[in-house]
Amino acid sequence: MGTFINTNAEYGEEYEDSVTGFIGICTAITKSRFGCVRICLQPKANNKEGKIPEGEWFDEESLEVGS
Image (cartoon, rainbow, N blue to C red; front, side, top):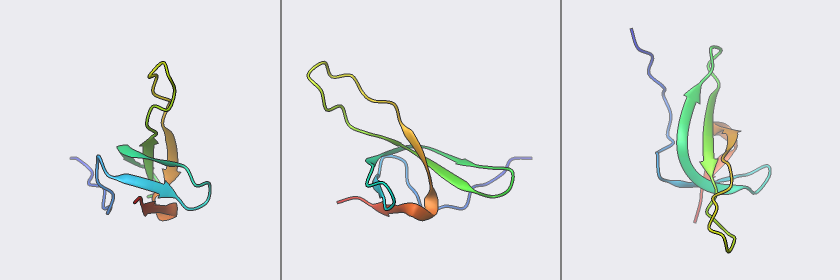
């Protein structure tokens, strides 16, 4: 039986972490065994080489929709 994750986050939407100011696109959503929903934010490439930095994980509650 599968498990559903109840979240308002949407893949491809830009979010900002209210604690760190980190901004990125939602690329993954996970739920821990104890119910904590975590969102992976992938930042945009910002260097001349075009390499994309690694994504970072944040608690859903600390994220705000980016502008």
